[in-house]
Amino acid sequence: MRRSVSLLLCGAFAATALTAVGAGTAATASSSVPASRSHSSVPDDRLTGSGAVTRSVLTADQLTADLAPAATVSNDAFALPEQAARPHHTFEGTLTLDGVATAGDFTAVRGGTPAPARRHLPPFSVQLVQNGSHLVPVARGVQYTGSPYWNLAVGAGRAWSEKGDRGQTRAALPFALIQRNANCVHNGVLTFLFKNKKISNVRYQITSETCQYFQFDMWGQVSATYTPGGIAGARDIRNAYAAEVADRLPTKPISALAADHPDAGIDLSAFGRGITPGALSTQGFLYDGVNYVGNCPTRQGDYPFCGQMLLPSYSTAKSAFGGVALLRLAQKYGPGVADELVRDHVAEASGSSWNDVTIDHALDMATGNYASAAYQADEGGPTMSAFLGAESYADKMTAALSFPHRAAPGTVWIYHTSDTFLATRAMDDVLKDRAGSDAEIFAMLRDEVLKPAKVGPDSLTTLRTGNSPTGAPWGGYGMFWTQDDIAKVAKLLTVDGGAAGGSQVLHPGLLNATLQKDPADRGVTTTGAIPFHYNNGFWAQDFSSADNPAFTSTFSVPFMSGFGGITVALMPNGSSYYVFGDNNEFAWRSVIAESNKLAPMSGGH
Image (cartoon, rainbow, N blue to C red; front, side, top):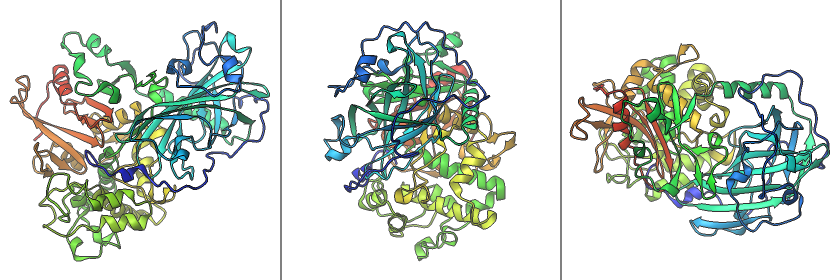
């Protein structure tokens, strides 16, 4: 999905009871327990401050008082301060927020004021372990809550000590609300104090999102309960998190790019140019093994856990799920899988409209089945609205197959999110034919591609039909990224040539075609004012000296694109640029010229 979307993406709004996430509702607060014995430490986990922190916001008195905050506060109040000291206590157990169904306040920013129940957090419990000063959720990625409005993801946070906290340990965690049956993400943060048998109230707030059509602030302070212990495999979770942090790409601020390459004449203003500042979630530039990252601005200053900010994939999943899954299947079973017929693998696609449609046709958006040939008209039309609004597998499949037959497969490009859903279902059946009925297409992508590429657990889940972890993955949208994770996906494609974990995981020939390096297979030419190439779920735009005199060779830049203002550009010199915004601004081409200064682009077609 790119520029048109139905408000049905807001999800189902039925008024039913909310249910808890994670380990269930804890009954009472009790003492914290010692961490499991030996485990690996998180790299660079050094808190050497004195604990002498000057604090006037979210003080110990405020967090222990029975109060209802009047407004959101600066996100600095939730951040690890410079003088933070090592935590006095270790948290291992279940944290439960009490009474959130009616607590707190809400201010609409865009999209109007929703039903009252939608203005509050879903009740949830989260199991946590602690590794040094790092608080690590047992469950990562999207968690299905059963709420009619919200699903949830909780990221890794921090614990530390301040002298003003009267011997208690202070903790803060990033979290995200994810709209049910939609891909919008609303990022928040919470904080609390704990010590022995006591836990303070929990203050929380949401002041940012990546969501074009629904934006708001939400905040509150609620009592909480803490049940220590009961975490199976706690030491393994600590070790896994230490390894995760160690495997992250080296990062520097984008401003360091000019200092690292002083002779290139980098214009830093090109990064984010054309994006409304208030609509920018984050951005980053991968070059020479370094992830040069931008900040994560919110309506209350920078997000204090920028590296943990959860970002929606939207239609970048068409590339990173649909396209990459094909490349993996081709490497496992040969490139001929791209030419297998959709109707042979999707039982519902039995009509004559699907007689000659291949998986490759569906990934190229060239099935020949469409209502209107106008650019993006079908994507914004009633059939696609029905598809996007459908939660059940049956309803989604019915909508996906309801476009009339208009042209021979492979001849006309018409953008349909539903086509990637169909391609994903067909590839799932291809996999089951070869690997057995227990095989599943997203599990293959996760275990055989993303994990070997060191993509972290925040990006190893996807949204599914039926609002259920056992449903069919959406394929064309519904994944999630962090700065590190999307940079690693880009690196796998552009730098590593589809190799990860010591082996070739993606088919080299199809990867070259996908990245516009095979002149004989450039995909389908799109309609619209600017002609793009579209191949295996990836867009591409050609550049030449007509665009910039510095471009001495004609070259093509493949890119992933997502609704609202999301782009991941994969440049032929090995660099990549990602930007996440939500004001329908797809402004990334100014970065191409800056990348060309670092390493001149050359054509691959």
